[in-house]
Length: 68
Image: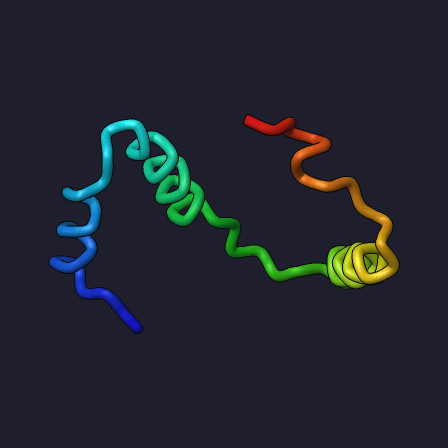
């Protein structure tokens, strides 16, 4: 479902102040996205990483960042 700008503004208006920096970071990343094409090496790395995850070769989020 696509949001109109007005709907998105309303959603932002209802966010708590502590969530605004995270939203600002996300928006900045969306604006600054690199338009360069994906290389064959990047695709191969992505596929390798997906296979590692399927094989159980990953570190759980809580182990990396801890539990709050």
